[in-house]
Length: 322
Image 1 (cartoon, one colour):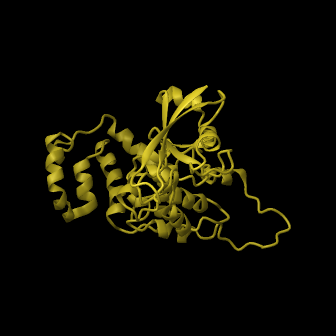
Image 2: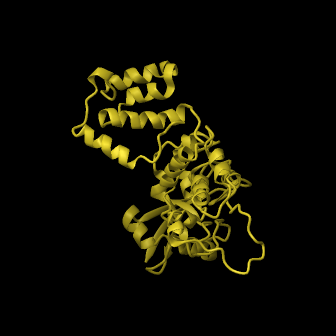
Image 3: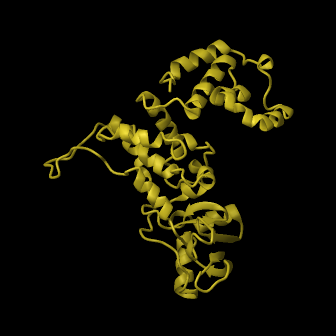
């Protein structure tokens, strides 16, 4: 199989700016992206730098951006990639900011690992350091983790996250999914401490913009977005929620659906922010012109509004009183 790759190259010690080099390779039909990078390094240019380790989709070190999509190089078949993206595959580091690129496809992930460390990604429990048997839990308790323990900390979701790009303090989907992995673990004794930490405005669950990009790029199917939603619920269920714009937004969302069956976006902002809503007046006028929001007395109601109310009452797990 013939493969053409355009690879991002940048050596801060020699290059003024990044550039791309094209390589044409002959590889086996079952080759993956990592095979192509290995072939370039071993047969064409030994100076190419990239991260790799296990080759089995477990370590997460070989994550790169291929034609704009975050992937694991060791788990992405070249044949399928060519069918999806065309004859030329462009390989870049997850983060192409010059200050983040150490060399070629290797980036500085310090902020990622610092945030991972902040959520204490380990079991906190009073256990025997030298147990005579395993500390087993029931299968249904394992199922509550919802495969959050499958996360390999590759950074694909962190790079794709819109909240991270807009707010450098935001912990990111990986760290929050890792938090849920332990708040859902019946053996962990630090649930309240963990929830209190991710409940903070500016860094935690309330700053997720719900773009769901983390779901699309996760190579292990962890679905960080749903784990973040579970953390929202746990914060209310454990009475850790504080009355602020974030919790009022959640409360207002349910209030709107109960009242109209659909979301009243204008009143949602008013409900969440109170008198501070005046700062959004220019945006409100623009949305009104586009028909995105309407006056309360003109707000339509969904058919079967009573049935919708009953569904909410049945499915709601807390009273949203922050």
